[in-house]
Every structure is written in C-alpha cells, then in structure tokens.
Length: 179
Figure 1: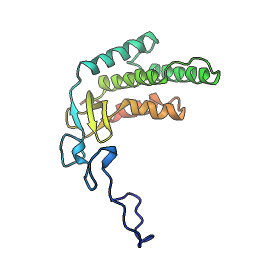
Figure 2 (figure 1 turned 90 degrees about the vertical axis):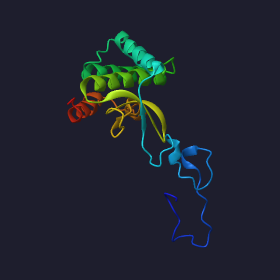
Figure 3 (figure 1 turned 60 degrees about the vertical axis):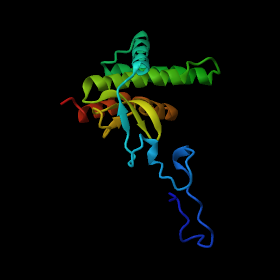
Figure 4 (figure 1 turned 45 degrees about the vertical axis):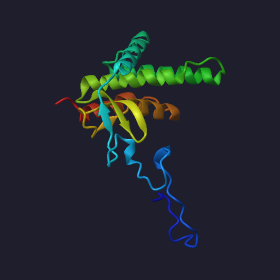
C-alpha cells in the first residue's frame, strides 16, 4: 500500500510493487512489523538500561555539571542549552572551531531526560521501534507513552529554536507527575 497512491490518475499503469518497510531488506509485500521483536503489531519494545546507557547518562550529567547546569532546574537547563546553541552558532558564523553540536545535543537531551526521570512517572529505558533504538523515558515496560529526549532537543536545535525547555518540559511534568 502506498501512502501517496496514484489510484484514479494513471489507471493504465501497473501499480508499483510494495517495497520492504523502513529500509530493511525484506521482500515485496512484507508488512515490516517483524522489525520489532517479531510482533504482529508495531509496538515499541522496552528494555532496562544496560551498562553503556548508564555510562552515557553519567557522562552527560557530569558534562552538564561542568557547564554549571543544575539538572533539577528547568530554567538552568534551558539557559545552558540556549547559551550552548548561541555559542555554537556564533562560532559557525565566524568560521571558527565550534563545539561538536552532536555532543551538545546529547548532554542536554540527557539533562532533560534526567529531569523527567526525577520529576515524573517516567523512567529511563531503552526503547526499540520501527525507527531504531533510543535512550528514552517511558512508563514501566509498557511503552504506551515514550519520550525520546534526543528528538526533543535535536529537532529544535536544527530549527534554531531557543527558550523552549521550561515551557515544553514543564508541560510534560504537569501531565506526567509521579503518582
């Protein structure tokens, strides 16, 4: 099934064969649902953190602390991210050596994730879905509600959005307060 079909327009043409789902090497017509733990449904698979993920979180939190960011304060996280973005953008414009933007996104995503872990009913987990495996926060091992902090930060970083952390993350905290 095509998302943007030609039904009704080029009725004379043979329909294109369906390709495998999301870049896998499966044959035509495969549903792609096997991408997630052999399930028939496209449900995320939630697993506990391993040593590598724990290390990433610990290192990210240490980097934020070195930047003077308090991960228990959304205003501090937001101000730190905004300042890091502005410094990166200024260095890029000046054609000088800028900090690695991926490392900046990583540490602030971890800071936001840690804030959510501490202040909501969401917990750090490893979540795999049709788009890949991510360090995320979810409610237990159900995976019904998933937040991928890297997506929150990276998407806004690419758009140059600043000032969003207290508002966006604060809204999540209001909706997901620990029960």
